Length: 112
Image (cartoon, helix red, strand yellow):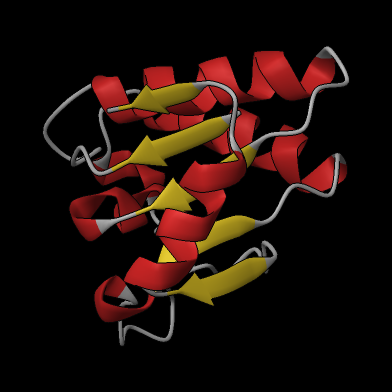
């Protein structure tokens, strides 16, 4: 399954919902690739107080990290802020070709 999150978690609960769904699928022992694109990269912001559903986002991030799930992050959207991804989640920079390759091998998609 491929989950692409580009919704801005500072303005919408949809980014949180996408992460929650991805966690549920991973917990069911299914392979999931999560791509954060555009404003979706803010899901890894250090300060979750500015995020809609920030407390839930922090919990879901911790669970995904514990399960060893990496976030594929659109290379052109990687923040310069040194506090971004302060918890040290595994991050894989990815370009358009890489996202297309993940899409080609996925049997299901969730796009927020």
